[in-house]
Image 1 (cartoon, helix red, strand yellow):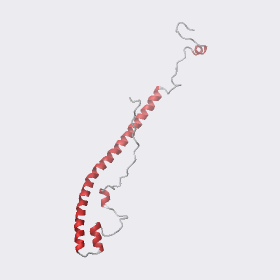
Image 2 (cartoon, helix red, strand yellow):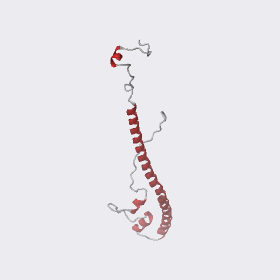
Image 3 (cartoon, one colour):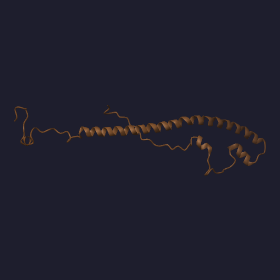
Image 4 (cartoon, helix red, strand yellow):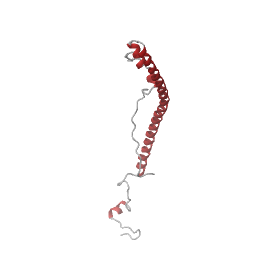
Length: 146
């Protein structure tokens, strides 16, 4: 027993030249390694958050443009339906061919195809061709906040 230090000295400690240092590396990772991992994790999370925000901004900007187009489409559709009702009343009073009747009732003359053709309405309507990407869910952190 070493009375000067208040510590008990062991033979294997004396061989090493002093008291044994307590190493934290056995129970958990060293501080510099933990800091490096935390720094990498924060950078990765910031990058992912920025990507999600950019995608959300693009989606919202596309979404805000569509209501204006939809509103005009709804108004024009309402006008068309009133015109169609008037046309139907006129159709009942006069004799018209089947093609003309289909043209007035449905708004198109036949069942042709648009395969390999450019359709202008596809660029302005809700079917603009922008694919919706599923985003990972953002979970809230309730414990261990800093």
